[in-house]
Length: 85
Image 1: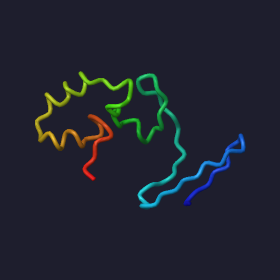
Image 2: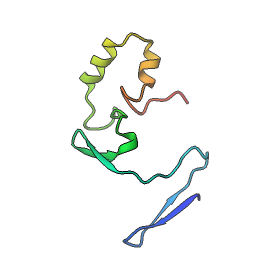
Image 3: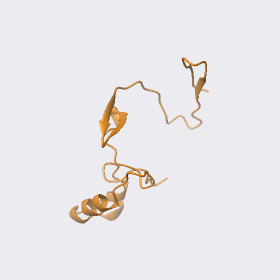
């Protein structure tokens, strides 16, 4: 357990990071496509499993980029949630 936060309703929110890659940050929210998201991650594209994912927009971006497909799919500004580990 790295962090335990006691919330206003008495609930404890625990942050456990076995691989020690994570972090904790308080951030302002901004609205992106009608959804409030933390400012530091507002540039990240939607995940393909997100109900608001726009397949046609991603296909359009992929068609107009001139780089390898692996590089495009790993670009989190195009589509999120795809990794290589």
